Image (cartoon, rainbow, N blue to C red; front, side, top):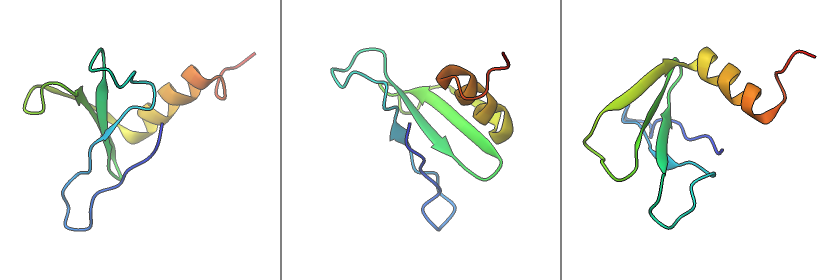
Length: 71
């Protein structure tokens, strides 16, 4: 997943997950700020948004990629 920050005027920059298939299927868009990560359905731009603290999001991504798992 790539990282996108706010665009300088405080507005969030949404980006498509690198794991989305590009064919309009089950895709999510993400926006990352200093203290939170927002996730939404890419097909419903004005729909509900899932918000988590940035540290929680980093832990989640690390667990998925295997870099944060305790063996």
